Image (cartoon, rainbow, N blue to C red; front, side, top):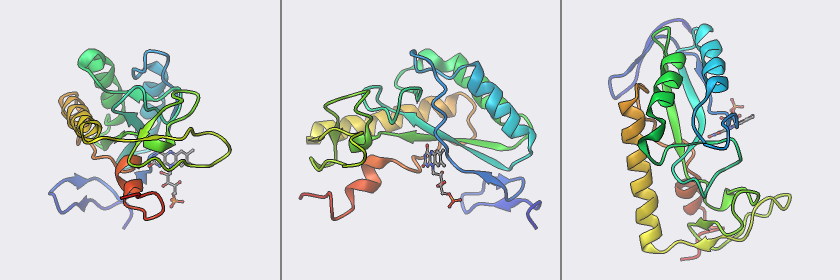
Length: 182
Ligand SMILES: Cc1cc2nc3c(=O)[nH]c(=O)nc-3n(C[C@H](O)[C@H](O)[C@H](O)COP(=O)(O)O)c2cc1C
């Protein structure tokens, strides 16, 4: 059963039922581009013949990283590196989906001491996160545009589906009552 193909409602066929969940890699360098270390890692995962690889956080805004080492896709400069990464991940006909994220209030304080988020409610966890500033309507539109841009770039460069933010902290956290101030 695990080794039989699976058709998603959108028509995409995954060659088996094994999926690697999103796990933040934190392997990028200071330029925030995919690099040889990521390519090697995804090559090895592809070699396991897993049907679907979901990448770790790929950020739409370099001032809102979940951690140093995140890949950022906010412009087209990294197209060749994206191609190499996607190619490694799908080398056996499996899928690789890129997880596009904005870390909102879960932005590492070592990256940004004044992050923006859906509300001004701070995430109090081991002192890792600063109190965020609640986004304005323009800030929210900027984030939406960032997601669209990253998705278009990822799709261009051979990721099977530009993966639609499985864990966009900005969106899923904003619906929780405890942090929704409106
Ligand atoms: C080291 C590590 C890194 C993770 N990074 C991400 C991530 O980048 N994005 C995400 O949505 N979830 C991330 N997760 C959560 C996993 O994708 C997964 O949802 C979680 O481990 C629960 O999986 P399970 O239900 O199979 O136990 C991470 C988990 C671990 C252990």
